[in-house]
Length: 234
Image (cartoon, rainbow, N blue to C red; front, side, top):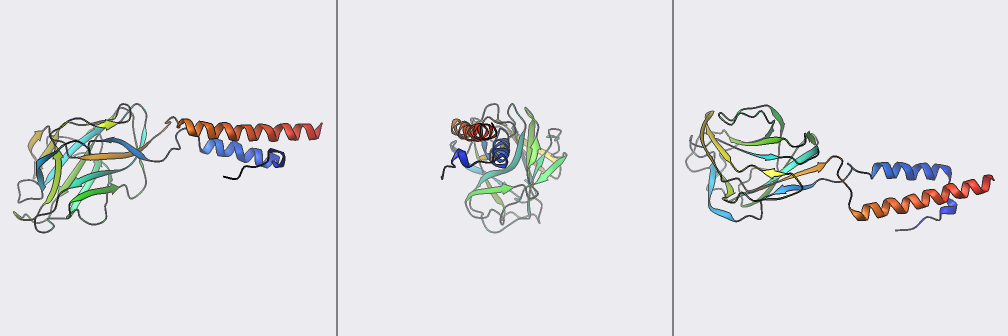
């Protein structure tokens, strides 16, 4: 990085420094993984989403931390599909009023990925229209649906864990239960959450120490420019 000589800074430059400080302040950090159980031990079994008429929808949840956050997406682990797509696969984020008895609720946004997850791997699902602001300390639900023609040979192989542990920023948690549905009827609720992570930006998050150091350096430059202008006008 090329350093600027404080004696060359004008009044406009000082104003620019102030603007930069404002833009880089709290609440402007990039999206990051806020909660994840991707590293937990996987089960040897899986959920066959879209299999026959017996398992058409799956729902699971997470809870936000102590501050509001801009939600940008989710990463999910899938196994290899048995034969072909039972799709289309739809994925949505639902409000805290989601009804776990029948799998319905207020849809906040759909989530999209590049193609259906038919090959084993971790798939990133993102909000197509930009971040959705989530309230602090609130539970939200994610629902996967495979509502194509029923098939006993085609399904989405959703991986899960029997662990209810996670790694997270302060206050963020993953719900212990996974809910399965068929035709709007609850089939089961079991402590076997999918292996997934949530990406978001906490609004009002505190910057890292290195960011504070950058703020301090810019502040020194601004102060030096002000002193220079003051001495010249005197």
